[in-house]
Picture 1 (cartoon, helix red, strand yellow):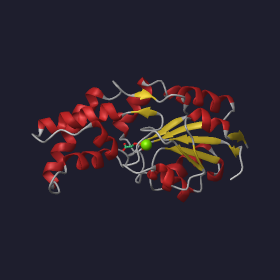
Picture 2 (cartoon, rainbow, N blue to C red):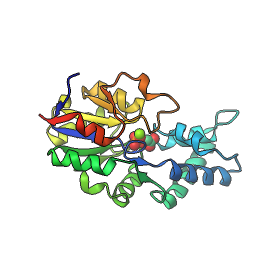
Picture 3 (cartoon, protein in one colour):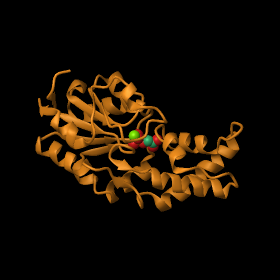
Length: 224
Ligand SMILES: O=C(O)COP(=O)(O)O
Ligand SMILES: [Mg+2]
């Protein structure tokens, strides 16, 4: 790939790319585990459970020796959502370089949108309270469409909504879900190494660039 990369828009992953949400997610998961009388998890463990949406995080958190049954899962899911609604956004912070990187993308005239696997009920308040809402045209949450990342649908939908051919939309994320969604949609993809990738090293994925921050990403693009 030749740099600078010519693009019209940037779609951004939320958890692990824009915001470090693991402390709030770990707090809610441990409150849920305590309520169900299950052992606590470390924040490091919870970090590795983030990426494929809340039902998956809940299932991974309550799975110890054996697979949970449907009823246990439903109770855990409801408890998690109740606790997360209380603490969502309290400890979550933008990573270094996020606001400056968004400013740079904006000054290049690029359209920006957020694409997350997090459920919409938690995404909208989080994007608002973290100050990210003013930078993006819209947000697509994990339950906005019938399929979420790694399916390409959210990226295809976002590109259509912005009127940008997928090859001119750069997707920036922290995980294999972002990587596969972008590749399947035909979008170039940069990955950050500081987020959550379900316990795997993102450097093993053949993305177009590993970027230390969004500022670094902005240095590698130009307006098409
Ligand atoms: O909710 C998740 O599991 C991850 O959300 P993300 O797509 O913003 O990383
Ligand atoms: Mg992520």
